[in-house]
Length: 166
Image (cartoon, rainbow, N blue to C red; front, side, top):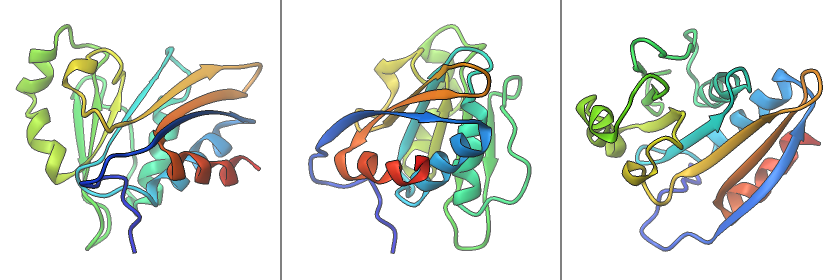
């Protein structure tokens, strides 16, 4: 049973910070988040270059059953993944090279919103076109491979992610 964050009732939101010790743990947090996602859900991921945005998204995709390689669509702007039969379709966006919200909409962004789980790298660039109930993830670079993840979303989802960093 999918515990989707996408619902018709108002979402009680919370923001928490988690420290990860490296890429594996960062991806595990993403994988744990995947259990909450269904078509119509959006995850906005932000952070400096090299912070681990793609690593986090790779964890989400693995959790959604996607077995093909997941890479950042820096030049293609959007990658689509179907995963295993019966699993959730994913649209993975990278907005780094785009200059305005209209260029995101020209990609068909609004058409993906209801049909897929949308994973958006650099999703903080155009908040005005992002769903108000999107999960937001900001990743900061720590010492060595350590990362600080600040995650805001449904209160139960955010609390559940703590198990991935224990």
